[in-house]
Image: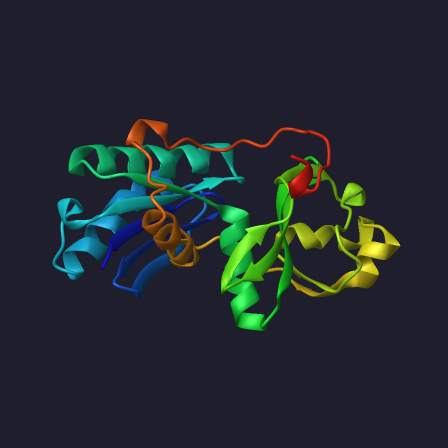
Length: 227
């Protein structure tokens, strides 16, 4: 069974989580602008408490974005460094997928739209269907004005994340389809671990230098099958 360390600094939250054969422990803190000072000590402490070193791990996962450009780079760089030193792969995980997974499981929702504040009156967002307990993206991750968010299916959707602070700016159709959104949601390293474990088992681990941040730029809206 696998041992995976996950790191996330994509928002004001800073989190580290350890997966040992399906058991998860996490250190989660909301500490704006302190990620670079805290992330590696938090990871070292979590491994030490478990009696492990980086060389005992099978992989290092990290929140690869979208989110704060600086924050994403911090988690990426530390994940790459740990993985390179231990000669193990990295597993980049979408921050939006992690939010969709956590809240979808908590709320029993099968269709989830996760949204983060992208600043400048825009949001990062993606729509997911939870299948076999894990989120499957229905389209490319997007960045756009809240008013431009469009639904893929005529169905009820669970909205999660601070991007839904802009719900009043969204279309009447979107507002009618969104179940009372949960706003105070951060991407968490613990929520990235089930996705990372699936990816590791499927052989999707990457060499440390190939695990890169994802910065979303504006592009055309497409359903996943049209990409």
